[in-house]
Image 1 (tube, rainbow, N blue to C red):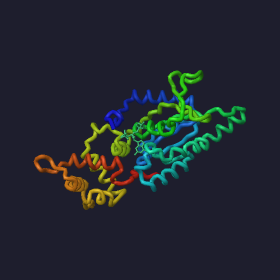
Image 2 (image 1 turned 60 degrees about the vertical axis):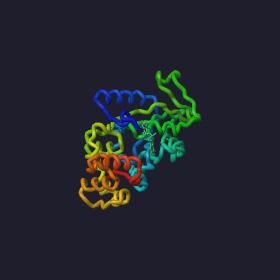
Image 3 (image 1 turned 90 degrees about the vertical axis):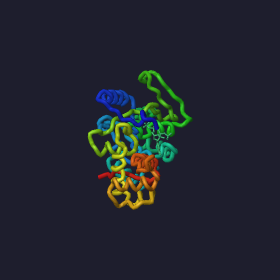
Image 4 (image 1 turned 120 degrees about the vertical axis):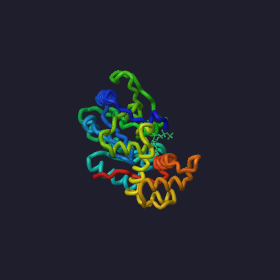
Length: 285
Ligand code: G4P
């Protein structure tokens, strides 16, 4: 992944622009498909999405569900469903779960379809837009969902100039560019969770410190996972665990000292790619 892609450099100007673009697009659509990272469904939600998408049909996709704990996925699905949302877990990269979205779109837009029918409007396609914070997998999802069997329609009368719609059969049109939203920055834990999954610019993060935070989180939420992965005794202070990982993985500097930064990078990469196990880092209370 490129540094640029990983960075979350939101300045007030960026946020204002993102909000304005979102508001412009909202006028055109019936359905908002919100993509979250299943490992951190709380931290990867935009704080203002309910207000921005007011009055629209809503679908929440727990993406990267292959990297999250299956039990965590189920709990979060129930949580969002209890809030009245239509929810699915998917893996946009492999396409798993994506074929179930059509059915969900119809459920989510049932009222709108019936309202149209009462007014004599039949077969007007549902217009949908994909939204989410950077790196949750919006583009991967659009590619997986739209696939090859679709045609692009653009600059038709009634369509804002420049907007491209992907026609997906006669019932659905999808805006081809996702709406990029900002995360909740003011919450320290949210920032750390975004950094764990690689959604913060790693340049502005001290990876050794991040690794210590990650060790603490994994020790608490998934006891035994670090022992299993690195063949170490994990019940120890955070710094000691990092040292043990360095030893276990043979991370030494030229002078023969432990290279803790290298161990930190290995740990973080292992976590991000799911090699320590499928993990959900947040609970839904
Ligand atoms: P964005 O538009 O929301 O910014 O995200 P994008 O689709 O660019 O996806 C960000 C990264 O997440 C990509 O990895 C993509 O492959 C990966 N990804 C998306 N969906 C899933 C999923 O369901 N499961 C898993 N495991 N990964 C997913 P990358 O490192 O940038 O590229 P690549 O190494 O995968 O090619």
